[in-house]
Length: 129
Image 1 (cartoon, rainbow, N blue to C red):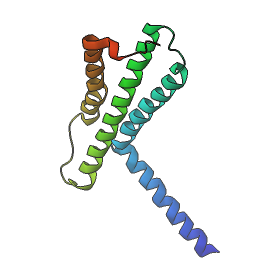
Image 2: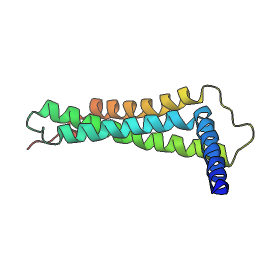
Image 3: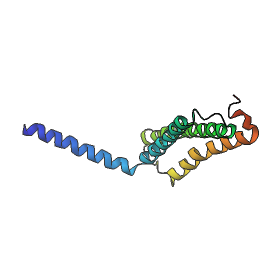
């Protein structure tokens, strides 16, 4: 019985050390931003899927959905790049202000795309029915 308890304690100690090392990496804020993007996407979809009577509201909801989908895809790409740096390029993978740069890319590019689409052809968003 004591042997089982010692094995479990050693496993618990390893789990705690792994959790602490995750706090030091860039993985936690990346996953938090990805989760936030998906959460906003889900909330906007559930709240706005039936709000198509007013054209302006419909266009705003469509633009928000477009933005959230694009940002979620880019955050998944950032996560993939971070995993590439962690597993393949193990040595000298420190990037100064990595999360700030990733946030500018993952939140900014969708804003540019949606803004350009709204400016060029806002009729693509929304429903005439």
